[in-house]
Amino acid sequence: MVLQTIWFLLWGLLWAIYFVTDGFDLGIGALLPFLGKTDEDRRIMYNAMGPLWDGNEVWLITAGGVTFAAFPKLYAVMFSSLYSALMLILFCLIVRGVSFEFRNKVESTAWKKVWDTCMFLGSALPAILLGVAFANIFRGLPIDQNGILHGNLFSLLNPYGWLGGALFLALFLVHGATWLAMRTEGDLHERASAAANKLWYYMVAAVLVFLIVSAFATHLYDNYLRHFVLFIVLIIAVITIIATKVSLVAGNFGRAWIWSGITIISATFFGVIGLFPNMFPSTINPAYSLTAFNASSSTLTLKIMLIVALIFVPIVLAYQAWAYLMFRGKISEEELGYDEGY
Image (cartoon, rainbow, N blue to C red; front, side, top):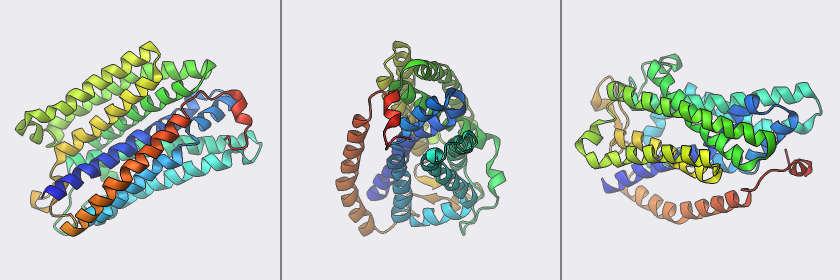
């Protein structure tokens, strides 16, 4: 049971890392039509994501791979019951990736507008759909004893699911606007800074509403009420949300981005800890729920995976931290002329 618990927490951590890293990319892409007033502005926004976006999405593959290897039964049920939603997310991410490479291949305003639209949709829709998917997991899904979902994509689009989508979008928009403010200069910097400060209020409203509604729509608070010490997760989230605003007002966007990232991690673990030991709660019968214990791989598999993870995950994190430090500077107009620019 200890190994299953460890891998349950690692599973949640990998999702949290993905949300932090790719979250600001998705946020910038969703802000493209609103902050990118000129073609130069939009190119700078592309370059703010360009060197990092594909590395960020590796964590999505890692989270999916860990689900497959550590919790194969969960993987099977997840990718069959949520097949339509997950395929739509992947399709959007594919179109978004193509946008990076194709936008500047033709000097045509119409051509660029098409790919800018793809970038916007390929960023905003995954942010919303990820929130919808996880909100439905928190709420519980009508899964029978065979792991078959009694519903479809449209049944996932319930009020609580949409609320989860609004929450994820709000978190990513603030995260993205903060990163953009940190990496830009001039008018675009001012617009990004103003957007981050304004969107912070939307994020706070989304967080508060989600927390309140979750008390009635889910069982996420059960573990917290049994073990009050777990409320430290929510306390950390409150502190980092406030610290994000303080840093934004002070104009320290690097620090604000870090606080925003910790907020996303705290928000993820609020749901993960609230779920435990469930991973896919069943609303038909709690006995049909998939848990960290009945959906896991063998003990030997979990041991081998843990050794591999303890060796390679820190290495990947160190490399990615180095990449972020390399590209932490401001993006100037001169950089747009480089061959590797977007």
